[in-house]
Amino acid sequence: MSPRNRRPSLLSTITDKALALPPATTEARVTRDLAVPMADGVVLLGDLHQPVGQVAAGPVVLIRLPYGRAGLSGHLHGRTLARRGLQVFIQSTRGTFGSGGHFRPMTAEHDDGLVTLAWVREQPWCDGRVATIGGSYYGHTQWALAPYADPPLECSSLHVTASRFTATFYEGGAPSIRQALGWSANIGLQERRNPLTGLLATPLDNRKIDRALRRLPLQAADAVVTGAPVEFWRDFVAHGEPGDGFWQVANHDEADLTRMPPVTMVSGWWDLFIRDQLHDYAALRAAGIDARIRVGPWIHGEPAEMKAIVQSDIEWLGHHLLGGPAPQGAPVQVTLLGTDTWLEFESWPPPGLEDLTLHLLPRGGLGDAPASGGDARATGEVASALTSSFTYDPVDPTPTAGGPLLSPPGKQADQSAIESRSDVLVFTGQPLPADLDIVGSTRAQVHIRSELPFADVHVRLCDVDEKGVSRNIVDGIRRVDPRTMEAPDLMPADDGSVRIDLELFPTAYRVRQGHRLRVQIAGGAFPRFARNHGTGEPFGTATALRRNRIEILHDESHPSGVVI
Image (cartoon, rainbow, N blue to C red; front, side, top):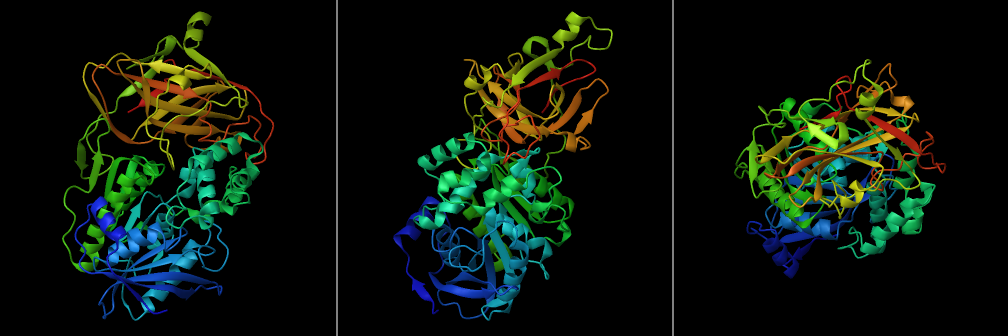
């Protein structure tokens, strides 16, 4: 198809101003529906955005995504970059927006990506240099390609994504059902909607999702929301049990990172991928890769995060493909939540930081040392004081509020309703004598004794202000299952207890003078995570529900607490 020249549109003018972009150097033209044959004969379609007047072959920015080429993604990435001197080839992944084949997320991106890369390099408009950009799922398509490209890519922009799918969607072994069904609804409905807004969940969608997740079994929740099965959801619920290797094709954390090109990243402290994205950043730097990351006060896909992404792409691609200036400042730039300050570091986690352990104490306190008297000689009265217990009932699962999510509402939220429940333990420290900055990784060590062999432990660190309002800072979850008891973060003891070493989310957060730190412990966080049925049945088909009494031990022999 012949290219169409594009004059500057009102949308381009608004976009440039809203995103505070550098001036365009030219206008864009687009050639639609270029056909790329895959190894199995399936044909995928792509659009080529080029600067007007470009004649000679040049570098190409490759984007592979399932969200459509003509809508918001095509405008933000294709036209915006072409107007700044870059060629951009945007391809719809198989089974989406005109591309042939069947869309089964995560399963074909490695092979299709390599074939597409080879095809792009063979085109007369490409000089052999190819870069990739994108976030979320089209960050995943980059991870499926970049470590395996031969010759290597020129650079990559891996935003709001992570190399290991299972770490995000089965966090600590607990299925992230709200994230998974929300995304399933998006992709299941997007081609029935306006191309500019089809990816955005509506309030009605969110209400449908929450209602669907309360029904059992969960297997058909996708049809409740979208009116038809969505393959990603069906795979998600069918392949979430310990030992199931179905999703290994979606994990790229064990790839040879020394083959990666220079990488830039943007994410947010409230983005669902942030914990694993920071792991990826540290691994890239350890492999000797030139990598940068910028983390703001954002949730997944919010406008301010998108602004930072587009600005980063223009600068990164301009440097590596067009000979522009290199990015300035330290390679790690993060906002300090609770302030207007940005911190800069040479590495992550930042070196030279001191750990502070918040030990759980009797009667709901926090201290700098574990409670004493918990050995075998302790009296029954003392031993009782050195344990706390709650009963988790999956019929009325412990709810969640705030946190790192795929879509709003997330971020910080008032925890009062959660902390007033009988199935949530609360441990609160003394008012802080001075501001306290929590920067880096956070973790918990919790000793539990569970009546049932199947249990979840959810830990949340909170900031309690002078008025007593508690708001979440970081959290994490671990599913305890007899089939995974040999995992290094689960340590059974002879007394029937299990020590859980639980990774919480990272942060950079200021707790103000006079505020108090608080630790919540519960048996779940619904509907962010699937309820633990207490039966060991597959979560997608389970319908039986069993109550479970869980003890938290916090004495010298079982020093439970949170490390910040």
